[in-house]
Image 1 (cartoon, helix red, strand yellow):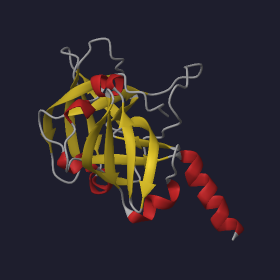
Image 2 (cartoon, rainbow, N blue to C red; image 1 turned 90 degrees about the horizontal axis):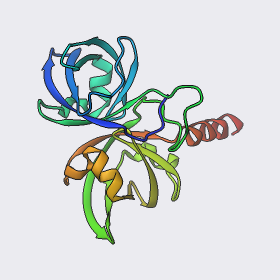
Image 3 (cartoon, one colour; image 1 turned 60 degrees about the vertical axis):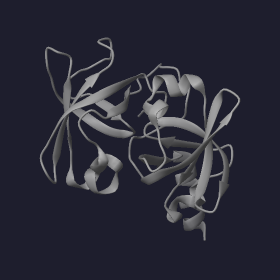
Image 4 (cartoon, rainbow, N blue to C red; image 1 turned 90 degrees about the vertical axis):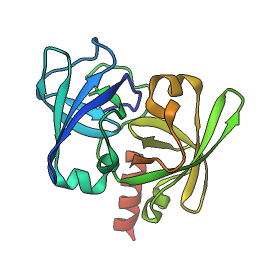
Length: 197
């Protein structure tokens, strides 16, 4: 489990394989916690650390299913990923509960300035719109965000300067694809409503 509060970014150094893919990632900080077998959110995808090098890089494997349902198929060498280590018992819950299981792919549409912040508009799959509500939580590329507004299958969210500075959102551009995870509470409420009906 994660909080959606990104602790670091990492650069993809190597991508190998087709179908099942291995990526090698270099965290920006040598202080980023790494341990073989640990779960790490890599731009929202919960991955397992397979190996660690002396240079503080780590590798992780993405299954064919992960490549199919996430935006990882667009990753290239040199791309920056948002990184967060898994939540430990007793850690502060500053964002919201994030599982690292991706529900769909969102597309960045357009941005406009709002004071020192940037308001981004995103497009999501139609099937996910019923899980998204104004002032509710959503996770994009591992970042916990608050939904400002929603119209059809598009929603807006504020990116404050701190978030832009600690994530790869500082380089976000129109057309970029992002991993989207809906709020876990919304998922279960919707399921309960289906069962009740």
